[in-house]
Image 1 (cartoon, rainbow, N blue to C red):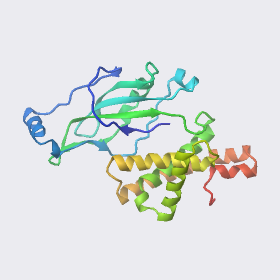
Image 2 (image 1 turned 120 degrees about the horizontal axis):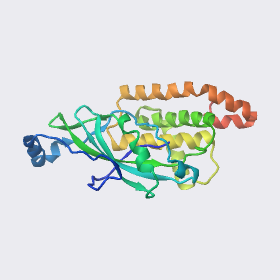
Image 3 (image 1 turned 90 degrees about the vertical axis):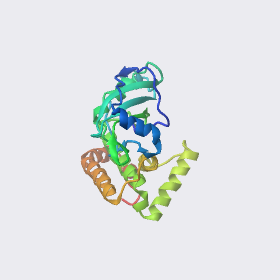
Image 4 (image 1 turned 45 degrees about the horizontal axis):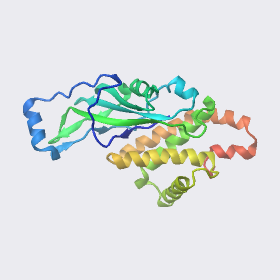
Length: 251
């Protein structure tokens, strides 16, 4: 499981894999952009990115975490025309190839100059990090994905949520940041992971509108519904006192 994070600055380096490609702009347009760079709005995500890349087998078996940096050319249609892995940590880990395998799933709002779409280059990092029990069975992973999505929806759209609820998750996020090895409920730990991702996305991009937040919430609700059979299987495996760890405290 991983998230996408916009890189702070663009780089031009030989790619590890893939094709860097060239940004294609008419000379007159390029001259205008060079003269007025303040009028150029960067490309941004149009959806919460949640691609499904295969973890490199050797890294997975050795429990190695890392990240890959991709550089893509985004067309005026919002599709990444070319994409290349330009860095990976650790080196030769396979994370670059793994991240590159899903770049066609990415969807963007293209860069704008004077309000009109233009081609542009974007760079972003894809962390490959193990969440709680990420190497567990498929039922637990499906439940975990649904909980993370619920946290993401709350974090990305926190300005539309109940202040008391937001304050609770903010406080728990701070507690986990300060005491990461303390004993937290499974649901809370996984929810906060998604909550942080949602907050980060809203902070680094244009905050979702109320309409977009309704769509994100429906996406999270759909994942929750799809995970109900897996949750029932987990209930059958655990004693009653332990089943609450997979649900909010109110349930």
